[in-house]
Length: 161
Ligand code: ADP
Image 1: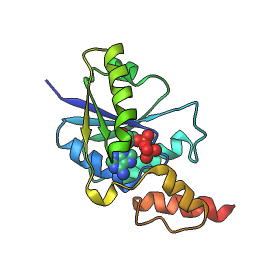
Image 2: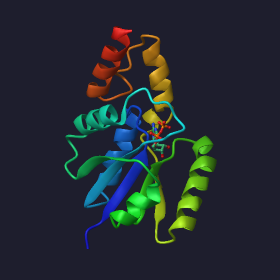
Image 3: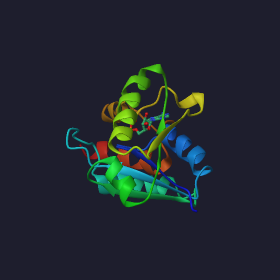
């Protein structure tokens, strides 16, 4: 049986921390789907199409990864695609409570689904998309924190304004 895992998130935009988690997770599955969620509560910097294109370009070196967009519950995507393992990244203890809550809720909705947590390389533990967006907004070069296609997109976005 093929092992198929999913890594859901908003990826607005994808960072080197996400890529690190994806590279690690990709070795554990035959296919890893990076599932970009349409979150109605957040006002994103990049559209889902832009986020998907940037993630795809940033992950060309990981052959068994696909990047898809999903508008709905994570467990619904998992059920539809026969996925039983959700991957999430844990940066610090501060992530734990939130992640624990989502993982338990997902398990309550669909008991056959488990969530596994991966730690990124410690270089990336302080990184998150909102810090990257904030730096970009103020014209700071973010290429140290994000893959090249994202750094380019950020520079274009904020140069226009
Ligand atoms: P964020 O906006 O916090 O960057 P996302 O919603 O895109 O996050 O996150 C998807 C998953 O990736 C979450 O499990 C989150 O904890 C994890 N993640 C985000 N940034 C990192 C990082 N730098 N290292 C490891 N995991 C991360």
